[in-house]
Picture 1: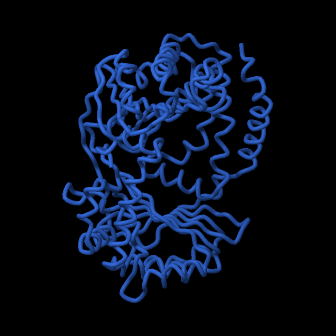
Picture 2: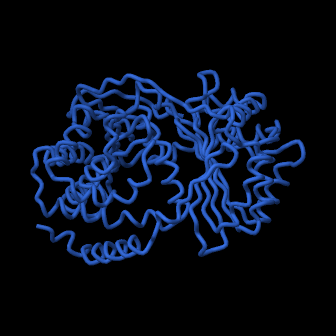
Picture 3: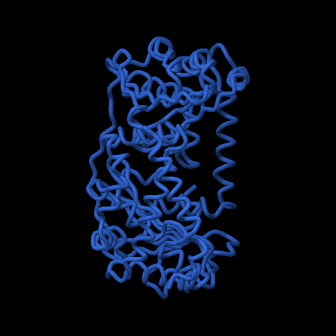
Length: 461
């Protein structure tokens, strides 16, 4: 029954054994220290192995702070912090950070924002002084802003040549329609003209003065020497900097599958995305979501991979996911196929989902999926930056760190009945938004499956 995956089992078993060894040898709990720097909460992940540090600035607001008159402003502000200050040009800033071998960048979600910095501990003080200078004195020079807007416009327009990324963009917006989270955090082409020096300065001031912050650091103890720099030169403390984004929303799920063809010229294959929005109550059981999506599309042993690749040769890869943030989540399936086989692919995916819903899954198949998830889980903690990001996510969602350690045991306790029930809820075919990005010639084929809405890819840029 499992001839097609026998070749993968030795590697899978080795990975599971290795990962369990890593997990057992890592005394993670004793390496996490929580402290308070003049009202600013700090989490330190003690790591004495290398003379390096990672530092995350967490801000408890994100793209939802952008009004309809200035969408994409938060993302633009964080990305343009290094464009220049009253004292230093962009070249000066770049040369200085490059001299210290610093890696840095920002990530903006709808709910929160993160700015990360990594480098050698011996350089942490001068590096952080430079970073704090950016937060306090960034001016977003007009010439650099104009160049960045032109670059951003080119990058967005160039998405027509990257169909997978374009499909992801369209899928997010369409599958989350009717919620506060469907608009891209970085905005669209039409939003670029509204980004000005004045608007970016106002956004930076808002994040500096109003929004709650938290610091996450990994490295040896001397990395904590940045306390005074962050408190005094960045000006990050507790006091009035306590705003946390809260969202109330009402969401009505689909009562029948929505099929949307997003047309893009000269596409020789169809990008397929299937999924739906998950409400806050639906994302509370992380372990159940992970196992449900993993059984469907988590690696070479998953049901979807075996059905659509090994058995029918309809695609090279397929994956499923189901995860959440604090107030919402998403479930989805991502793949691609030849234009000629798009309807066959969709029917096969539907059949596999219904097979799980109807408990037509063997215990052996279930154990393979569970073993893969439990065995691979510890690898997510080998990199300190990844572990810091996990801690940040748990804090943002209001989850205790203890959940990190009990995750494997919680997955082991789940039954096939629980997973089948969960799959029937979050992957219920009636709830799904089915997005196919490809040539307009796909329309007759998709109409065989139901009503189809047609949109141009340009709507999502």
